Image (cartoon, rainbow, N blue to C red):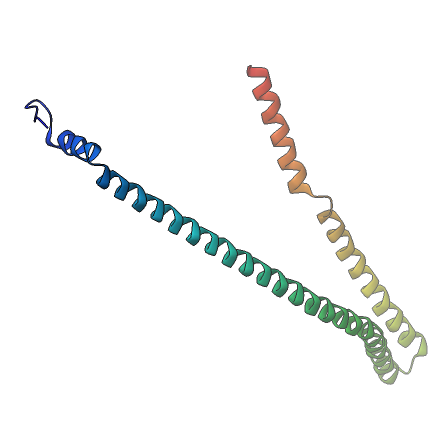
Length: 159
């Protein structure tokens, strides 16, 4: 093998490796071993990822079942609480009417107090209902959609 003076040392080592079949075969076998090792590690990682995803899915499903059970019990307690709240309100207004009767000795004034308290509650609930009703309708979503459509039409007009 003759050494050419205008070749760089790296080129000479490559030529030497190319001319020596034992070295190139060793490099190829190392590359094959590395590729096989990498493939094995990737397969192990993918199987571990699959197991982790399956376990997380099972955990999510079980948590969801527990949550639905708790939600049902919570709904039942709220439904049982509604009549209690109504009876408590009526009792409080009857007590107020009784106190008015006790101080004034007027049945008419006591019944008027009872009715006014009921009307006051109804008025308050109607005002709150109206405010909540205004909140419905997805105002922010509609506004955002209008802006998007305007932006799209402006972009289309510029073309």
